[in-house]
Length: 246
Image (cartoon, rainbow, N blue to C red; front, side):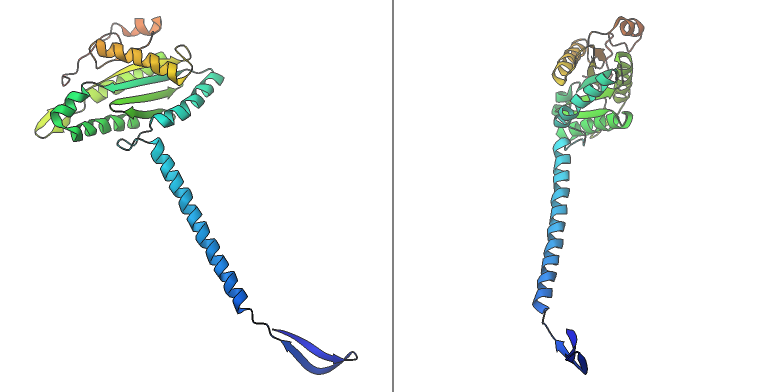
């Protein structure tokens, strides 16, 4: 509503003219548009949240919650580039559970999944925030240790091997232990990309399996590491058999 004074020849006569305009439809349309905007914004937020969730699911192993191979391939290149710029080493450790098929055959896949999750929990608990821990599938895991050279990488993985071999598992009324073997390759001396590091770590893992399992082996270890570690019981060149292993 708008009010105008009534004038004649510049003289205000004292009356007023009222102009009324019904804007109900306009207000309803504006309100409907605002509600549509709010609904659309809510829907967009839901879609973005869903996309984030789906991306996280796509990058994680559903059983253990660890990162998967896709995440590793996306991030390892950046880690290698950073290590190269900063002239730092990087350890690439490939882990494989020993006698895992026998565990599934004897105790069932539920117990097998329990063993996988126990290893995942151990790796997660004892790795740094900067480390990358992934499950590739089956009983195979990869740990990437930025700023870790051959010696440091081997010592850290050997500690994890020892702690895992001490874990006790329960299957009905039977208790058992198991172990893992690990092969290590390092940037830059062994390779500068995922394919090469994986290949050489896999070769070291194969040697660890052939030499008795339940041990950590370096690919082409440096003389300093070989000399320093060879006399010990848990040397990367001395197979140790876990009492619970088959």
